[in-house]
Image (tube, rainbow, N blue to C red; front, side):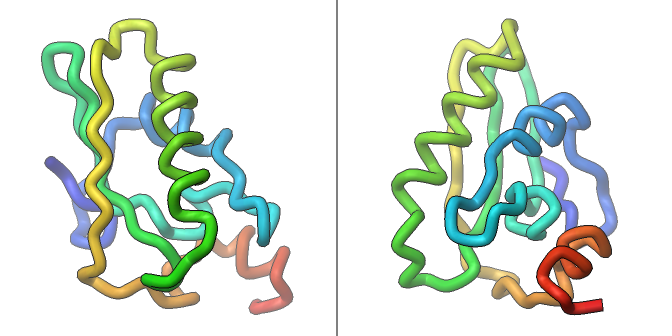
Length: 107
C-alpha cells in the first residue's frame, strides 16, 4: 500500500471518493484534513490507511462508516473495503492541505 505522508501517491479514485467524507465537527473532508495516509485497490479489494485527529475522537465510528459507504458508492468495482486506523505518524495540523488550513484560519 502507498502512504501519502511518505512521498508515494494513493489511488486517485479512492481519494476522490474520500473527499466526499466530511468531518462533521470541522466541516472539511478527511483528505484535506490529512487523515488519509494511503490507499490501494487490488482485485476489487480497497485498502485505506487513515487516522483521526486524536485517539479519543468521538467521530471515529461515524467516519469509518462514511469511508466504507463512500468507497462502495463511488468505486463500482470495489467488492470489499478494509480501513486500517493507524496512529503513526501521529496527525498534526501541518498535515492539512492549504485549503483546509485556510478554512480553519491556520494560514
